[in-house]
Length: 421
Image (cartoon, rainbow, N blue to C red; front, side):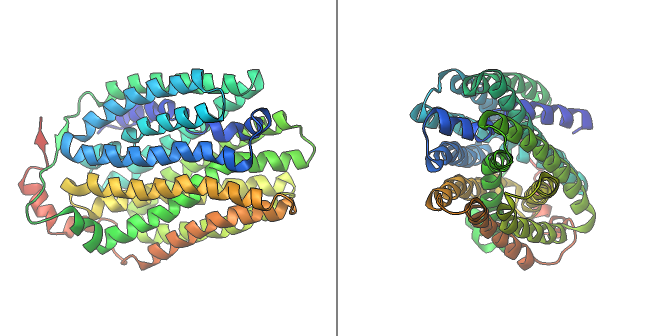
């Protein structure tokens, strides 16, 4: 895969993910205009994330049997249609829950099947860097989503935000389909002596990486869902009015995502040189520490809070490409889709619950000091970071590309790596 084609794929994902953070960006305005509780607002995000978890599972599972490229194309088209429907038709809590969930159901194919395409097209020595670009494009898409939503709120409220972000995925779908055209739709052979259960349950490294990804997803999805509202609350406590604080929180959260994209790029490349485990341990520890601490600082001056939020974005997202690269190296190619399917279901399932759990904590502590409410809310996310750290510590100390020495790679080379359609 040439650098130019990888860049085009990543650019397409930026447009495709334009709806991912739309609701998170406008939560304060929706709570005001739709008279929602924090729990109800969090449920909209949870609807999307839960459906996205199911989507990631379904598309990854199908990619093993029908080919990754085919699933990417189908998902891109579905994402464009469902995002436009959400932008124009969502008008209250129930319609938002249903239509935002539909967007989630469409999106999973532009994540895990693309991981499989990159795993096929990029050699292990450069794979961490390539996965870093892929995850960075996700963050850039989130930043774009927040920026567009913030612009929409400033121009015309939540409706404008929904429409603007809902139209961009069509551009991404067209670009992604064009970028993937030279690649074959691969269906890997599945060796008779191996089963998916072997890769999921008996492969110790795979098991730890899936568990670590689940904890990571709880922390990072919950953080991205509530960090715009947290920053908006911090600005409001300093005297900003609701709409202005919401817009500022959305824009700053967009900057955080760009900072997270930098983390994905640098940490993926670093793990190519140092190995996956050291990077996962350091980032897991740092993420847990910030999760347990940041919410208590809602009254802190911006000169303290903004750099801390930037660091939070860096450490919570930086391990994402490393976790993804590591699992692609320890799982047989014919079963990678199945493992990624279960990993996605577990990870995004946890991520779907995290915003709701955060909202429940805020509602339960509504009469407490703001620092206590936000502190306890983010502490629930810190539990996921702590779990990810524990899994990283239990990984074996190995070199960056252990898969090259595993017996199944001989089989991979002998069968020509693929069946072509």
